[in-house]
Length: 186
Image (tube, rainbow, N blue to C red; front, top):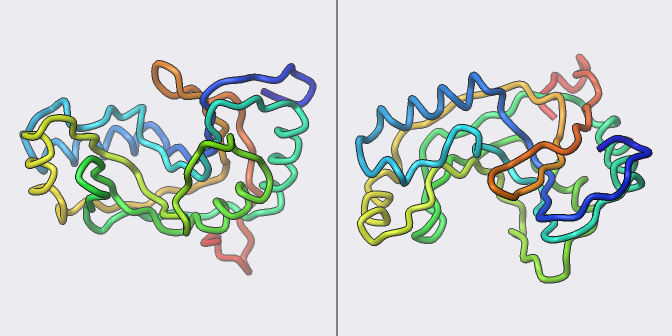
């Protein structure tokens, strides 16, 4: 959704999407960790870092322009994840992500969320790798916590996603080129 387009309404969030080749590699690495309940792993196309969940809201061209200008002043960088899987409660297995705190803070300062949306405070960057639903899957997830999963990827854009029957990128906001002073590690 670029400037000049009509507003879009839906379950929206702003986040980071690892490149497809890395999402595929993560899925292979997860499969190598366990031959447990396959339904417990999320699909490669669902791997992302949510900077801010907006909820069921409308986002218009002015919101996109605000985000584009804000992120255009922040340097591209390399994010890392891992080194091990971690449970959030008993229903979410994640790989912690490091290096996106400033992007989350900028997102929170730049775009509003629905009033009924609860956020992590402070922000906790992560890739959700499993959403175990059954008691057996939750027991399995307990055994997966601590499993090694780590990597890095260059981030040069932030995305506006719609969550309907999957995740769809509605708009992309480029980050400024990495500078020697910032070392690309924002």
